[in-house]
Length: 185
Image (cartoon, rainbow, N blue to C red):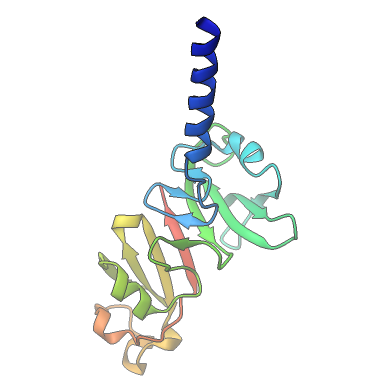
């Protein structure tokens, strides 16, 4: 009787495990991107990307700011992500920012690095748009993401002005995303 119950338990457990939906390694959501979640620590990246390559960039940037960027490449040498921890040079820190470099990473609604501004507007609520020197930064707080759109794609009257508030209606539908960032900081 015990053996039969134990066998039934193993079969049921095996069935439930096999029925679990496999996580999409390229899905972007509010608290995850593929296998990464907002509570993952930097020292766990090696095991998460065991099949891929991780390159840690330690040094200074153009502005003499210390950098602790981590580049992730797939096993074919394609650059996937650029990761920056919340606390620089702390392996127990969680992830602060992720720059999506590979176009396979997309949201559940199909928005990714190669999307256009129209794709963003049709699928998500834009929280705000910030006007910087060279880009319009579009925030989608529901997903903890922001994208930049090069000002060269905006109307001439907005290209050299950092004071004017940019409205979504002023950004062309076909404007391409320059940078696709996830902010867990």
